[in-house]
Length: 83
Length: 413
Image (cartoon, rainbow over all chains, first blue to last red; front, side):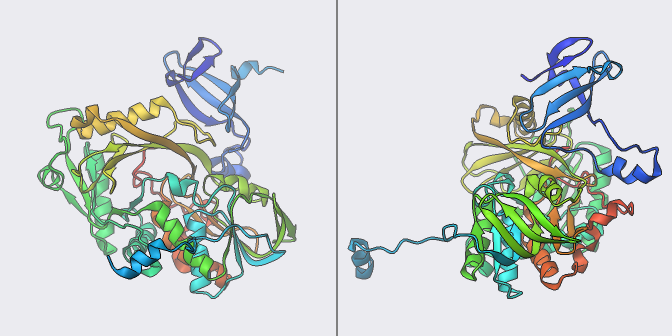
């Protein structure tokens, strides 16, 4: 069982969570970045900062996860980014 | 037993037989360098050396020959797509598979036994009509069939009448089939090597040297080589390799998982696929049931498997054939798929002059092996993109001319 720690509800089975994709650098609001924002998502071989949602409690938060080792390095609420 | 065979058997000095020569030393320069020794790269090498007379070719493979997604796919060949450019392209792929064993003099075990995709909802059935009409228009064998015909095509299938996943109809694609994936790669590799193509296994690309808008050198873990033209067909690592050349691709990596059961007596002639159950199942020539293909729910560039996905696949398989409940799994695995936003590949030119892309093959690359190799070779040899590949251009994303094939791929997404 893969575990993911929700910043509000603690450590839970990853099947309780929904993946919402990478935190995007490009903004769809900016016409110059529209193509980038729509189609060219972050896909590193390394640490990816990404959105997740704890489905039962509807908690949306950010996780930092390594895309090769599948190791979850940190999870936090978007308003409380650690230094 | 003929006497000559007996004499041959008793003789001491047998000449060892190799399909593919051992990896040679790297030369300082090649006309064409192909990045990726999977089916696509090897097919391109075959067409370059046999059709276009370009023999100074090196195929660089990070691991061993055809050990990536060429070895990890579930061997399905079909052309039942949604858009005209895709159907045209995959139709030619099927045609090339039909004669490939003879063309290569290498048995690829092509078995054209038809693919049946099941609809468990009205919405799926509507999309089947769309695909069937497009397929008929393009001259492929495809039709929407009712549950009675589904039962005739596959008598042992659970139609789940009155149940949650009742079969409302099917998309019957007679052109569909399977081919032995390793044999396809080895057949191309053998014939290409005979014409002088060098296959460099355990040779990893570490970077590029550029002069203006051209790649001049490919840097590898075994040294630097000059390259006239570069063709990238690196499977799951396409995004990474393109990144080394400074090219951004619209690709996200997801593992795709599959598994096979112990061998059973032959009972399943056709390929069975269900979009709603996110499962497809076929019986291999060894009698094993091949069950695919579950994409992981989040991005990952690893070939690890998860119990969640295997349970999900088993559940789908049991729904289709409940009598499999005591069958044991023999093997399971995952491959890294390079998914594009519109579920179509990226083929053709790149922002660099002499760097060509055969990427974004996601969960649908094996079936395209011969046709992608044929036209990528033509593109590299002529220095301009073949017409049939133009709709798959990288530029389509900037022009918002996407080629939506979501739902026309058999795996779950």
